[in-house]
Length: 414
Image (cartoon, rainbow, N blue to C red; front, side):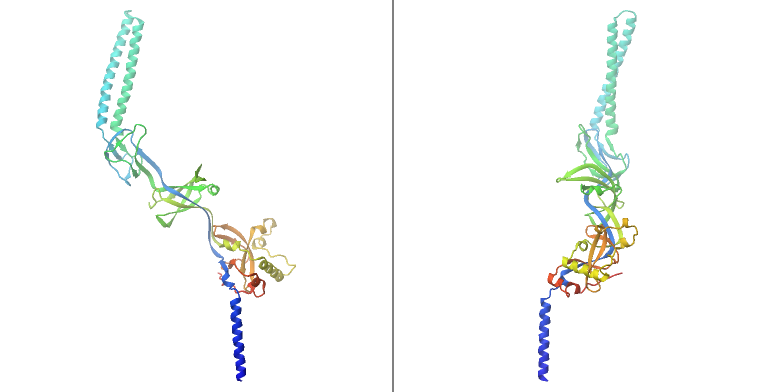
């Protein structure tokens, strides 16, 4: 009895050692396989870009006269109305200039009246043949010159008067908000060549524009009226909506890359968005909601030739050698053969069936967001675990107890 027990113990030890070394030698195939699950969700095909936020209806307010700024009555972010006084120029020099031009106007008027009297007097003398026709024409020309000089001096006087009474007071041309002020009290401004900008007023801060640069390879997808989503660094958790307002035809080359400016209109009713902010823009080219989708890696996966051959042979034997190939859902549901999707339009998903055998399923790929792709096909369901990566020795894959007998991953469905 003791010998029998000893033999049993020895056999058990030997069996344990054999099992240990077999397990140690066998490859950990389960850990070398990666999966992606068929899920249901939304697919968005987008083109990304960046741009800067700008205000709409911006007006730069300047001055038409040179001089010293006497008073500044508004500051940054002030809301202003039409004709509201923004600043006042010092009028001391303007008063002197106008008085000088007024005196010049009176002197010019006197010279014109004198020339007129001389011409009228010469007309009477000419009728009495007391002076020559040359003397008469000379007096007439003198009167015309004095009259033209008076007109010129009168215009200059009116200009100086306008400078004093109108242009010395800078007013707002629109209703809006002061977003920039480039003047201080006591500052001297010169308007000899161009009108200097003193204030910048935004007409409506509740509407903003984004000038986004789009690469030439993507500009063909952008259309007027297209929906846009964007974010700004100041509020990273908020997503804002917009709409393509204009696609400008003039290209701009940045770092040897041809770009086109796309103008996007965006709502800013809460006034959180500010001019100059950098926006990260996504143009929504295509959008699908509540569709079955899978990782692109699952559609790109291809097993070894030996695995594919074994799978095909097994599937042929299951349906019979002379049985016609199984058609996909798109082919089976359409009686018009001319509209059936061709084989080249189909993609293949690889998974482990209920028997733990490597199997394949033809699907039709649709829209993609670069990470996931919309799929449709027969027997396709949410929760299928598709193979995305497989690293196995050819020896284990070729044996009957290899890959096709491996435990399959957990499968979830609706």
